[in-house]
Length: 176
Image (tube, rainbow, N blue to C red; front, top):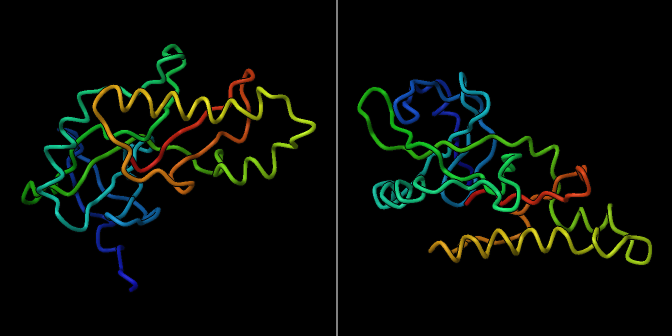
């Protein structure tokens, strides 16, 4: 079923208390659509298509936690695209979804692509082979220890940074 999600482009919204406008369409998933923000280029919005009211209180709870990587707080590494603000329509203050940090997915690859293109089992160090899995495990462990469940853990929602910075392979969960 093809759904036209372009209806949201240009809609005036509040990201928390800040006014913005929904920009270009980026992608869609099972729960809704993701759009760039027109004025806040470092943010995107996820707009739910169904059951919005049931999701608002969960999002408000999630926004109480900072999702900066525990092992590297100084660098402010995004290890999830965690909700940051409730998004409401300006006209009627209807709850639409949430905003989250924008990550340039062109700088990240899915785990299978990383393994295929970056790792050669006999030529890669153990650190290079295991570091993404360890980082993903640390992320999921933190989420579980803080009362969260990862509801959609698939290779579609895990990204590994293309460039290993300072020998750190950065893993980010998207669509949390």
